Amino acid sequence: EGSGYFIGFNWADTFQADDKIGIAFGQPMKATDAEAGTTLTEVDPFLWEAYYSFRPNDSIEVTPAIFGGTDIYADTEDDIFGAVVTTTFKF
Image (cartoon, rainbow, N blue to C red; front, side):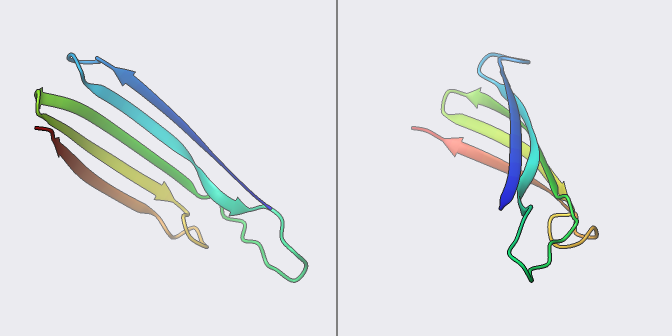
């Protein structure tokens, strides 16, 4: 058996028209019960993300985001952090 959760929040028109800001966090699926003979780890992984999306003009949308996580693999030493920028062009 396994369990996990995800919670996300979005807000529109925060700083200017057509912009969006959002945050999300949660725990990816992890085993909570296993068959006899299988070892379960006592690690509680946690992931998070924050982004801001804006339109500099009618044809372009830019979305910078940062993300991270703690204890994502089998032990407490596995943390991640990153950033990404997505640009969408529509013609």
